Structures are given as structure tokens and as C-alpha cells.
Length: 133
Image (cartoon, rainbow, N blue to C red):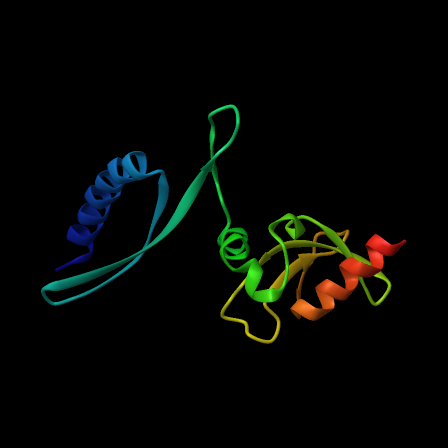
């Protein structure tokens, strides 16, 4: 296996993945390749697409998909995705979650767009504070 052959294989695999993307409504991003001797290992990421009202396909970030699947684990509702809440006197917006972060699974952004991690209880308390005003 050499660099030229791996590049040609990568291009062929990328073309084949386009058929899978269309047939299954997903986006596949072909990533890195490692090769040595007679073998090569490719890495790729799969993201499920969401179809909007006008029929255009939009890529759903993994953190949004994670929140949709696991919101009940945190005691939150699906409608809390995109909701504002208050924490330490500042307003944040829930943008998703990451289940592998056990202590701080909820992801939110501030007004400037910077992303922060929160506990589920901090978000629930913040939602209550904002809704009581």
C-alpha cells in the first residue's frame, strides 16, 4: 500500500458513500486514513439528516440529536431545546447535550455564542427562574 493507491481508494470510497447518503438520508464524512504494508484503515463519521419543510436537507448536529434522544434522562422536555434559562445572572440557550459527560451533559450558549457545559439541575433551575419572571 502506498500514498497514491490510498488516495485513489479514498476517492472511490467517497463516491460510493454518496449513494448510501441518498438512499438512507444521512451524511457521511470520510475522514483520515492510516495505512501500512498491505492494509489501510479509513475513518468516517455518519450524521443523520433532518428534512425541513421546504424539502431541503439540513445536517443535524450530534449534540442536538443526543438531546432529542436523551432529554428525559435529564428531567427535561424536548421543548427545552432552544429554550433560554438563567444561571449566575446570565442568560443561556440550550443547544444540545452530550451523554458521555455524566456530570455536565447539557450544552448551552451565551448571547455571544460561546458554548458552556451545565448540569441538568442547573438548567432546570434556570428554566424555572426565567419562567417565573
